[in-house]
Amino acid sequence: MGLPLDGLILGIESSCDETAAALLEADGTVRASVVRSQIDLHTVFGGVVPEIAGRSHVEHMVPVLEECFERARAQKSDVRAIAVTCQPGLIGSLLVGVSTAKALALALDVPLVPVDHVAAHIYSCFHGVAEPQLPAACLVASGGHSSLFAVESLTRHTKLGETIDDAAGEAFDKVAAIVGLGYPGGPLIDRMAEGGDRKRFRFPRSLLARDSLDFSFSGIKTSVLYHCRGQNLRDRRTLDEQEVRDVCASFQDAVVDVLTTKLARLAERIGARSLAVGGGVAANRRLRERVTELAAEKGLGLHLAPRELTTDNAVMVAGLGRLLFAEGVRAGLDLDAHARALAPAPAP
Figure (cartoon, rainbow, N blue to C red):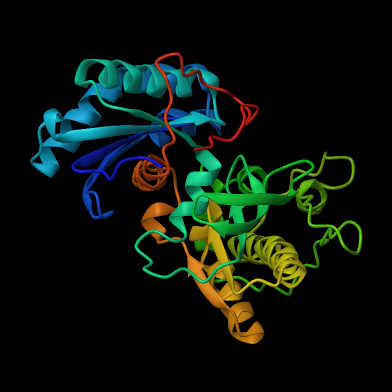
C-alpha cells in the first residue's frame, strides 16, 4: 500500500484534443480544473487532425498548468503527486502530457502515477460519491470508445464488451456530417433531435448475437447515408429542417436503444447493483433519460457522470490517480505513452 496523500495531486490529460489540468485535495475536493478545447481548430476538417492536436497541446500545456495553479491559489511545491493519462489515445497528444508530467515529477521530486484514459472515464461516474453501489454495470461511450465494464471497485474493472467497428460518438459525428450539421456531431444531433420525431424513420438496431455485449454502429450510419443520398449515393436532394430533425431523432434513438439494451444485458449477467455511464456520449439527453428509466425499472442504483466530466478532463485523471496513489501505484521516469491500451494495467 502507498502512503496517504498529504497535499495536492495534479492531474494532466492530453489524450486527444483537450489540454487539461486539475488540482485535487487529498479528500478528492477539486481545487481547480482547466480545459482548453481544440474544437475551433478541428471543425473545418470535420474531425480531429492528430498532428494539429499534438502541436496545440505543445502550445497550450504550460498556459493551462499556470492557469490551474492560479485558480487554485496553489504553488507547485504544494503538489505531492502527479497523475497523467498515458494510454490510450493519439500518440502525439499523449506524449506531450506524459513528457510534461515526467519533467514536473523530476523537478518537484514527487511520485508519478500512470492513468488509463478509459479507466478515468469509469471513475468519473463515481466522482464525489461517498458509497458507490458496486458491482456496477458501466458503459463508457465516446468518439473513440464504446465499451462495457463490470466495475468491482473504483480502481478495478473488467471489460466485457466493446465496439467491433465505429464507436457511438464516431457514428454521431459521421451522421452529423451526412445531414450537414457540422462538427462535433454529438451536441448538434442532440439539439436537433429535440424537435424531431424519433419514430418517423426506423433505422436498424444491430444487437449482434443474442448474448453479445459488443457493439456495431456502422450499419446505423450507413442506413442514414442511404436514406439521405440514395443507395447509389448520388441523390443530392436537400432535406428540409424538419426532416433533418426527424432523421437526427430517429438515429439518436436507434443508438440509444442499442446502448441501453446492451447495458441491461451486462447488468443482468453480473448481478449489478447499479448502472454507470461515462464518456462524451453520456452527455446526450436521450441516453441519460433512458438509462434513468432503465435503472428505475430494474430497481438499480444509478451513477451518471456529471455533464462537466463527460468530455475529456483532468479531474477524472487526478481523481483516479489519487486512489491509485493510495494503492501504491507508481511509474518511473521511463513511463511511455501507448496509443492503444497495450500496457499491463497498473498494479500495487
